[in-house]
Every structure is written in C-alpha cells, then in structure tokens.
Image (tube, rainbow, N blue to C red; front, side):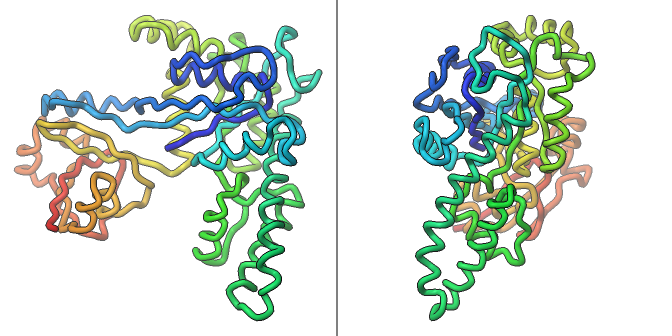
Length: 364
C-alpha cells in the first residue's frame, strides 16, 4: 500500500509524516519546504505475528509494510502548473490512495495559505486543483480519439467515456464517483491514473486540546460532514503531538496514550483506515523459518493470494490448507488444529479471509 500525504502548505503534512515514519523529515514554517517528496516504508503493526511466533519460534518475523510519500504543499493554481504544481501532482499519480491533511486548529504563529481557518474551503481548493489537472489529461486525450471516433468503434466508445468523465469533473465531481456500466469502462479510467480517481482519507490535524475524549471541534464536525457526503472517513490526529509520542519508548508511549484518552497511536489508526479505504486485508504464513503477513485485496481468491508470495505458487496452485488464526492460537499448534478438523483444504475458488493462516500446495 502506497499512501500520498497531500494538502495546502503548512497544514502539518511533514509533521504527520514524521509521526508515522519517525523519519525526521523537514517540517518548516514556510511554503514548499518539501520540494522533493519524503518517502519511507514502515511495518504494519500486527500483534498476530508475535502470537504466531510464540508457537513457531521462527528465525524471522516479517510484517506487511506500507509506503508513505510526503508530497509538497499544493496551492491555488497547482492544476495549471503554478507553485511547482505539475511536479508535485506527478508524485500523487504514483500513489494508491491520498491522505489529505486538513488544518483544524488555530495558531497565529503558522503561516497559512489563507488568513482565516476554513477546512471546507481548504478541501475544495485541493479538490479543484486535482480536477483541473485531470481535465487537462482528459481534454488532451479526447482531442486525439475524437478524430478517429467516426470510423473506429473503439475510439468512439472511448470518446464517450472521456466525455462522461469531463462532464463530472466540470460539475465539481470526481472520477471515483462515477458508476461504470462495465469493468472495461472502469479499467480505462484506471489506466489513465487520474488524480480524482484515487480514494481519499481526510486527516484532521487538530490541536492537543481537541484530542482525546472531549467534544469534537466545529472544524472537525464540518470536515466529517463533507467526508460523509463523499463516502469516506476522517482520521483525527494532533500531528505535533504524534511526532513527540513517536520518540517515546513503548511503555512510555502506552502510558501517554492512556493519559490522553486515545486508544491507538496515529500510525495504527492511519494504517487501519488506509486498509479499509483500499479494501485490503492480510493473510498469514507461518513455519520455523518465517512468520509473515501478506497484504491482498479483499475478495482475492486463493491462487491470487499465493501469487503474492511467489508467481510460481499462483501458476502451479493445487490447493491451500487454511486454518483461522483464532483457532490456531487457541489450540496452540497446527497439528492439533488438523486433528480437530479445523484445517480446511480449499481450492482455486476459495475467497481468502483476513487472518487466514495458509499453507500453499503447488506444482510447476
């Protein structure tokens, strides 16, 4: 999973990146302090791996990983190339989903793109720039295919699809909002890698006073209302505080979070929301050599999951031996689970579930 952190300048993008990556990316108080994207890979927290390792005592424990990209602040006009916009927008095209950081705190010491605090306006500014950039791509492509649309049926169909996307963007919508009639039509938009086709998770950057068990600020409520209309979620965090928490030892971190009234740190919540946004789950493999988590799309069948491990396993897939994580942990061994009839033999049509512990049988 590759998440791109975007937003207006000085809303806390690099600070949030530091918090989840513990990377020390520059978080300066001036626009475009992040000219080149900061990129980092972080393991996905998964306590199931350690529990499995208590059974297998493996030589290595390998979690799934997430790649985070801290992209420079976008400004009004970025979609038309202003403020290094074209360069920054190209970084967004490479990610699977967008984490849109929105400032929801007052601070006179922070230089902001606008003199007043208005999360809805800030969101609309970024969304508009992404739409402008997509419109430029659509119009350029449409001008090419429309010339051959009269004599080429495929070109005609593509022109219809492009026109539909263009109409949606011009009316304030996003490519991800469109319900396509066929998988082929949807694939065409995916191949174009449009910015507004990417799933979005809003990250409300609040003050320390607004974090914890207290009432939500009006700014967060407005952002949540906007997100609900778009069918997505809001991840509430104090990026500055999260960056400080990230430097603590595990015991100190747990105690600090408890005092703040926060159940999970920012990293855990961000990854959980990201997995849900992208429809991702993890299946597990376990043995004396390695205990490991593998990320797949929800709804993936057993051969596709096997292919995540190695292409040969998908090509020569015969069957999968599957046991639920909870059953394996409660019984304490794979052999006991097998004796109790809890290890299932599944074929090519089996849809993998989150937490399945799988052993792939194959032949090539």
